[in-house]
Amino acid sequence: MVPVLIGAAIAGAAAYKFFGDKERHDLALEEKIFTREISESEVPPDVLEKIREKQRNRIPNP
Image 1 (cartoon, one colour):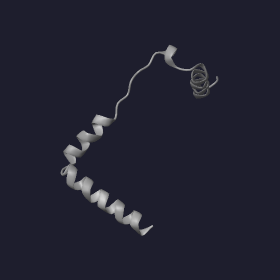
Image 2 (cartoon, helix red, strand yellow):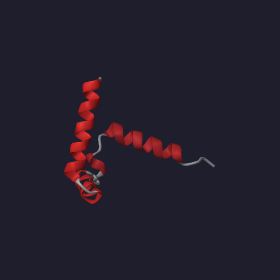
Image 3 (cartoon, helix red, strand yellow):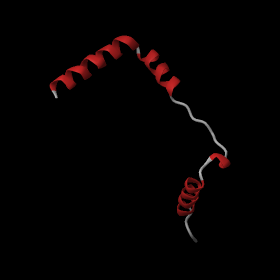
């Protein structure tokens, strides 16, 4: 357990040293995160049905 904690501390220090300032760190995170809209035809039928079911459950019944 102790070697793991020491390794995590060293990795954290290296990451802090590598990124230097918060601005560069934020830019690096932004480069890895993205979204893509897909068409309904690309979604598997079982997933599509689960989505529709959740949407039906959100709409309050009068």
